[in-house]
Amino acid sequence: MIKTFKTIQGMWGLIVTTLVFSSAGVAAQANVTPEAMKAKYPQQYDSWLATSEQTARTDMLASYPAAVILWAGSSFAKEYNSPRGHHFAVADVTHTLRTGVTPDAGKKGLSASCWTCKTPDAPRLMNELGVEGFSAKNFTELGREIKSVVYCNDCHENGSAKLALPRPHAQDAMAKVHLPFDKQDINMQGSQVCGQCHVTYYFQPERSNKVNIPWIFGSSADLIEKYYDTRRFYEWIHPISKTPILKARHPEFEHWSRSEHAKQGVSCVSCHMPEVNDDKGNRFTDHKVSKALDHYQQVCQSCHGDQQAFMVKLESGKQQIDIKAREVEGLLVKAHYEAKAAWDAGGSWPIMNDAIMGIRHSQWRWDFAMASHGLYAHNPQEGNDLLDAALVQVKAARKSLAEILSMLEVKQVEYPDISTKESAQQAVGIALEKLTQEKQAFIKQEVDKHWPEVSQHGY
Ligand code: HEC
Ligand code: HEC
Ligand code: HEC
Ligand code: HEC
Image 1: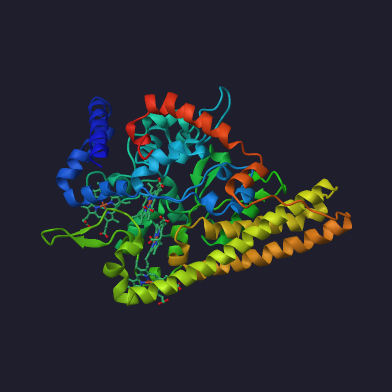
Image 2: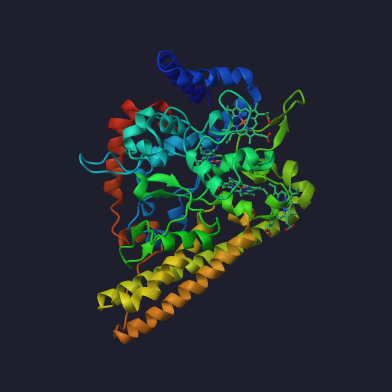
């Protein structure tokens, strides 16, 4: 922890020296240095720093190998971990196989938009380069500019305790639903600062891959799907079934916004960063944004009573969602391979269309549930509804595929071995060893030598 503090101090010292000589607008940043913020707000600062203690995470692909097949053709099938402390945001996105390595000369590679929700340097660079100027850059091209993890000025106005929303995509989204930041009450603003990042989005191809929140019609899975379908949008074509795939990303904000808790004024902040007392009895907001269940007595007890009884209920709800999700995944894997068999036997779009759209829509609902970390606690009702609908859709797709296969006289379909992450990755042709070696070489030659220290922590 102390090491992290010193490094961050050192690196900010560097930026401040350069900024004093640059433009007046950025010089205002000088009052948000860690030294200044720690001196002004010691409890908030120290608890913010403590997110570096949250090192644990799970390999989600090892836990649910079927996901490798569903995401085949995209980088999600290479590596996908559960979230951990905010202090790892920059290091984790730098090291994951998903963000790859510097592309060959002339190749476009991954958009810098991937930095948007990891660091206050993203809004800073958007101010300097313009939103599309930023997103048109390559991810690795801006690595040397990324100097801080999720920090005070990601949620507050520079140097103050006033909440703020520095990301343009979040401001745009709230304009779409007619609830701009300055019209929100303090509970909503609290959740909204989290909702800059803990929200689903896509990179808008016709706007240089800038981050866009697809809420023109609304923020439910149905209405986002309507938006994507209207635009004939897809993230990638699935290499096995040829399905134009939609990908959900952590829609925690959306699920919370429709929950009983939101109606009762219980916000992300109430559960994940509650008010606590310091040694002298002073109240402050705990900035160690962490697991909500660690605060059961402080937060949940007054409404939910005895912890043990409540945990039994919570666990059984979680299990119910898990069982459904595994069932949908299993059927989707089969559907992708049955579609492949049909294409291989001469299937054409006119007869395949309904089945392929069924796979697209079912997988979208499954993903909108699964990508939402903590769904079983945030909105189990919506989670169950999404998976129930996904189940109906994948079953209908398979029924249609069964008819097509019989018409094409296909007697047998080969399914992949999804018993482990490794076998699933092998089935879809992911050369994990090669990808890992390339990544390690990139880390050694570029990141460790030239990027600020925050991109190296956590490993
Ligand atoms: C992830 C978002 C986030 C980050 C990062 C963050 N804060 Fe906060 N901060 C909040 C929220 C939410 C509140 C509570 C606002 C409310 O309900 O009034 C808050 C409250 C505060 C307050 C008001 C007093 C209190 O304790 O409630 C201060 C002061 C403060 N933060 C300082 C900081 C400092 C200093 C940093 C950086 C070291 C920081 N914050 C980082 C979200 C954040
Ligand atoms: C600037 C973007 C950003 C903001 C703002 C933000 N987060 Fe996060 N959050 C992240 C990222 C990125 C991760 C994953 C970091 C990793 O795994 O390396 C994360 C991880 C988390 C985790 C997992 C922690 C753990 O130890 O398992 C929780 C809980 C969380 N955030 C809640 C919140 C809440 C509540 C707020 C608002 C008060 C908030 N976040 C604001 C980007 C953000
Ligand atoms: C009623 C309390 C409550 C509210 C409100 C709430 N959460 Fe959670 N959240 C939980 C619980 C419980 C979990 C399950 C794991 C844990 O944190 O203990 C969880 C899990 C998470 C996780 C995954 C953590 C991990 O390591 O897997 C993230 C991220 C998260 N919440 C973010 C948010 C955001 C963002 C909001 C607001 C939009 C929010 N939560 C609102 C209680 C809450
Ligand atoms: C201000 C009161 C309040 C607080 C604080 C609160 N809850 Fe709730 N919670 C409710 C209400 C009201 C409901 C809806 C009725 C019910 O299911 O009991 C609910 C429902 C739930 C549900 C079931 C959700 C559903 O839609 O069926 C879970 C899970 C839950 N809460 C977890 C938590 C956790 C974990 C915490 C603490 C981190 C917490 N709650 C804090 C009031 C609260």
